[in-house]
Length: 262
Image 1 (cartoon, rainbow, N blue to C red):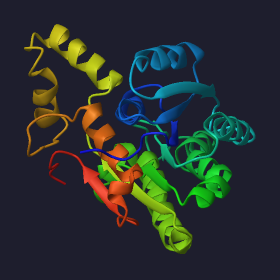
Image 2: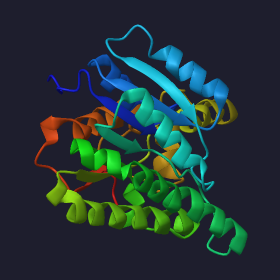
Image 3: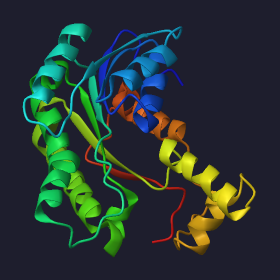
Image 4: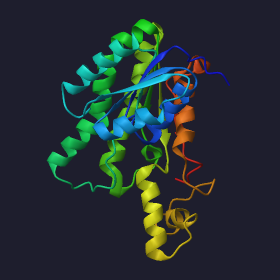
């Protein structure tokens, strides 16, 4: 399917690795121009290099979305580079397994990254998005429908991202802006890929079965498709939602979790 994104410009926050980079690869492959926003210069350079030679173009800007002021500068740089914004995707907020009783300072840090990081980016980009009647994609998590004690801080804040996105869709839909929230399950990005190798080596499990077995036997994570997802599968969904092919889809909360049993 031709997504119709050739010649358009997109900002991908958290685009230097994982699901964000996978989204950028789809868009650039279809002729779009993309700015990747990340925190680490080396990773950003590698990501831009990985997208070279495709139909579109990619560049990067650096910022920490949890720090006030950095986002506004980075978004302005992206707008200048792209000549406007036809879409924004936000992949941020990696907290992991942290207990409910973690110190207040850590709750505040999690809030700044998981929720306020998303809010800051959208707030800064909104005038440009309205001008182009653009699309927004945010990321929550499948666990917002199945909160666990070990992930309550993360899950609570991701649930807030989902509600925030629904509010964006209702508020700015009359101005032509679409906003959708995707909820990934266990996706084999770099950390899970590294864990697969570690589990295989430490427990003597077959490499292609190690993660799948631990997901079920130890994590209690039953997935209908029997495997973790791949970043490119999330990237394809996010790119579709950013495109005009999803022109009547807004306010949705879309699970992409392989049929995870809650």
